[in-house]
Image 1: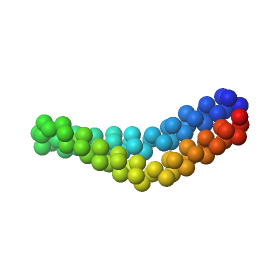
Image 2: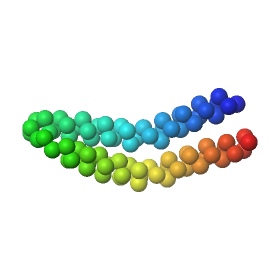
Image 3: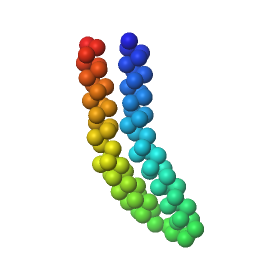
Length: 80
């Protein structure tokens, strides 16, 4: 039972972090490519865009992520 709970916790961590990581990776690659084409050396533009997009993702997916986390917590408390 403990192995199953740990497996679910790891899967939940992956599901909760994947959207933010994927969006930030895509934004970083896309704007890195644009900067390479335009020969821009400023590093604050991709950082600011990643910050804005990751904040938007957290705002839009916050209820889904917190719902999954609450359900997992309730399951763990029921097992105790």
